[in-house]
Image 1 (tube, rainbow, N blue to C red):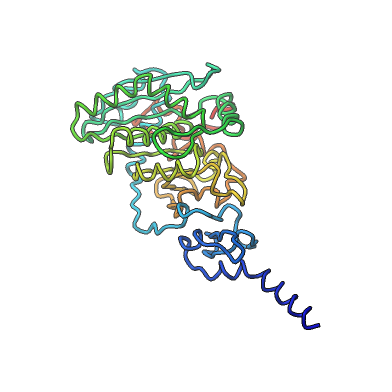
Image 2: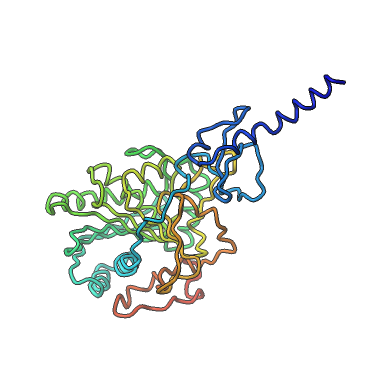
Length: 370
């Protein structure tokens, strides 16, 4: 009888040992480097700010709020300074201008916004071997900022969106040759094509001609992913550090893994991922399931989320973790939120430029577009 009681007590202690050993930990950084009594990793829940064994189910923790990697631990963002005026007055017109149908209209739309801007060149290539859809970028020089801007256009057709989706889910990611981590092949191949099309020559020329020139990278949707790759590539290849590089994206999808995201943050610290309320694209492709939650597709810093529209004075939230997009549901999503940023319908903005801020176009005007 005594033996039976001892066995039952041992069983109960073993059952709860993993939970108890992790729950005593009070910081994310310590938690993700620890194991429970049976060798299972401890994981941090950002919802409850608590640690538990990866074998434990915590009812109040959203599955996507678990983290097993120090990189995705919550950080203090109280001192983060987000310059919304720069996003509205500088980044927005530069990104929206990518939809101008030719260089003449591109220049005209930009000159309506900036007193000292010179369009350097534009670049267009087939995004992949199907040679059906194209990827586009342009370069310009902001004289009063001593900054070269490289701006990448977003997805333009439904077919292109499907093509990207196939790549996300069916094709293996490719190692990035300048940093650790892997990148979605559709994006990486398109970047190299644009780079060889003339962006490389333009970057090297301005680095030679303009002392301490800054290089800024902007893009929406697909263009955001290309801008992200370009920023890491240029920063690493040419040794640009600190304030000499800047990245801003609107509605950018996940393009690589957590190693790529961490490497990006080390190279381009001045990075901003702007997300409009229920825009579904930043939540794609989805991160993997709990046992591999930090090993799938992953965002880099820094997320700025507008939960209730993007009118002047709208509230925004600064992400305390690199990839917080999945911690809040975008469903039911609103595809309108992907087409409009800061209350501007990006695809038709070039027609009026900064002479008049247009209203968002109705959805019926954009069937089949993204």
